[in-house]
Image (cartoon, rainbow, N blue to C red):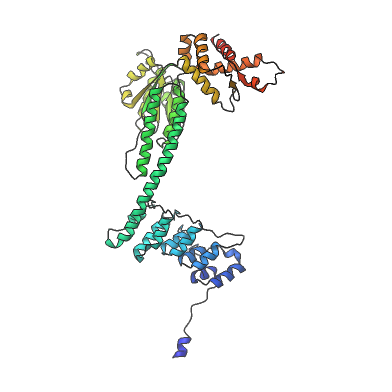
Length: 479
């Protein structure tokens, strides 16, 4: 009888690299791999698993350790995926192989890797814990910042997979504790990001001269939107904000287009709009010359602006001066724009002179229902214009004609303001506003070039615009 027992068939000795990885035969595995290093990331038939998948799934820690420390020319693929899209960490998690999971994570395995069904290693570790009543692998993954809120392809988080049975209470408590900690940590991170975003907005607003009421409104919107970000990071459910459609009323050169661009960046920055683009249009971009041309032309521009801001400059030109003018197609363009303002796909800003814009406001009964914010852009004073000039000189782009140039110390804000007051009329300032500054600076630079000698080698003098240069620049503009 003893002889018969000794003659029982023994398990076959592994012959493949995957067989050694499964059996845990470290010496055999090492010899095979050293004889043929190309087998390090070899895929087995059908399952397409590497030796690391297999050894991790069987918790053969010494073999996992040997592969992670492999010194050959090829490195082990930590994130290799099998036919189900599972990484070696998925294999360790789904089989409760805690030691293997710890080794993989210590060597940089991605804790949030997603399988084909969207499950993370934590999803699979929870499934194993439900069967084995052992939370050790779940705890290891959580200690390595596995996301308790990660959703699979069915929208299920790891905690969603728990039933209400009392046998799950230890696992449920563990997941809920870490979920709360992660939520608080995300809120702290969101707070830091919010502060950076507010600082960026404040920096942009600091470059706007005047317009205090508008800047205050932008700050209110930004703070509210960013606080909503923090609320969501804390797990609170709040309704989405829709940015209002607006009307910018004021004379040319008062900063309407610049503010629209800043607003585009703000709404994108806080996630209200998917892009920061501002599509600027006028009547000629929207209105066709013949019947049937205006609708398609306007719709194309609206399509171009989707996801951002449609800035309709001189919007009053869409409304005919005489009510009997039935040949004007501007009203059709306005109605096309109004028809998409409730969709949430685009934010519309109508801009123009204050008085003529009253025609637009009264032309469509739905205008004031849709356009809920009206901002008045006041004319700039001489001090405002002097401040704008200083801001422009300190923020010149490299491709600007004035890049590298500076103002003489005598060009103080007060001195420039006095000179502007003296050299321009109130009517000219009201008609041009900030539009005075750029041509004045260009003319001033040209005057600098005119008065310099060719043999001038004084680098300071070559780049310094004086008060006299600015005065000549304004005089040329007035002419």
